[in-house]
Length: 364
Ligand SMILES: Nc1ncnc2c1ncn2[C@@H]1O[C@H](COP(=O)(O)OP(=O)(O)OP(=O)(O)O)[C@@H](O)[C@H]1O
Image (cartoon, rainbow, N blue to C red; front, top):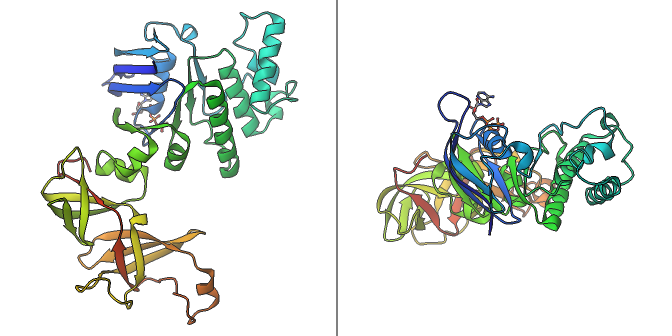
C-alpha cells in the first residue's frame, strides 16, 4: 500500500496557482526529500498536506484515507517546522505530550517517556525550551510531532539553523527514528547532499511542479533534464553531436546514454559528472594515437580531500574535475610527485563512463 498518494494537486494563495497539478507517491514507511530552489513551492506543498492551506483541486490520500477534505487535527499528519516552534511556557514533557490529551495520564506519561528515549532526551523532561540547545529543541519538536503516531510526518528544513556537525548527527538520528517507527515522512531541504544521503526518494521541484522523483542514485545518475542534473550535483554541460550511441563533444567521442529510451541523434546537450574526468599532466604519454584531449586550467580551489579544478577546453567550453590532494606534492615541490595544477597548466583528460545526452528541447 502506498502511504502517501497525491494526485493532480493545485493550490495557491489567491493569485495564480503556486502548485500546479502535483502527482506524488511515497511508499509506506519511506523518507522522501523535497528538493528545489527557493520559491519552488516546497513549503506550500507541506502546508497543503498538513491542511493549513486549502487545495484548489486534486486529492491527497495517506494510509488509505482521503485527507484533503479533513481538518488539520483529523489528518494524523505531524509537522516539524524549521524553527521548532515549541510552546515556550511548557516544559519538554508537556511539549511532547501536548497532542496526547485523549490518553489517560499514565498512558501519556509512558508515551512521552518512550519518545524522549527514542530522541535521546531522557532526563530533560523538566527543562523549559529556553534551557535547550538548538539541536535539543529540534528533537523535542520531532518527539512532539511523533507522539500521536502520525500517519505522515512533514519536516520543513528542521536542520537548517544548526552547525554542520550537529546537522549531520541530528539528521542521522531522525533517519534512525523514522526507520524504527516505520513512519512515512516528507523532508524539505535545500541541501542536495543531505537529500541524496538521507532520503529513500528524492523529489525535485521547480516553479510549482515536480520535475523528477526517484531514488537518489536514479536522480543523480539519470536526471530528467540538464537543469535537474545541475541542481542535484556538480555537472559539466557541453554541446555535442550524437550518433550511433556515441556523442562527439569537446572532450572527444564518448559513449552516450540518452534520455527517455533510445539516444537522440544530431545536436544534443551533453552532461558529465566531474568525477568522470581523470586529469593528468599533458606531457604524459598519449593514450591513443590521436593524442588525448587537453584542457587549460583556469582556477583551482582547495577542498580538503581534493582540489576543485576549473578548466577550459580548446573550443572554450567550461569543464570541472576533482584532483586528489597529494600531501607529498606540497612538501616536495620539484620532486617526483605530480604537482597540483595551477591556473594556466595544460592537462590531458580521460573520461570514464557514458555521457548523458539530452535532445535540445530538454529544459536547460
Ligand atoms: N503566505 C503567502 N502568500 C502569498 N504567496 C506566498 C505565501 N507563501 C508563499 N508564497 C509564494 O508561493 C511561492 C512558493 O513559496 P514556498 O514558500 O512554498 O517556496 P519554498 O520552495 O518552500 O521556498 P523556500 O525554500 O525559500 O522556503 C513563492 O512564490 C512565494 O512567494
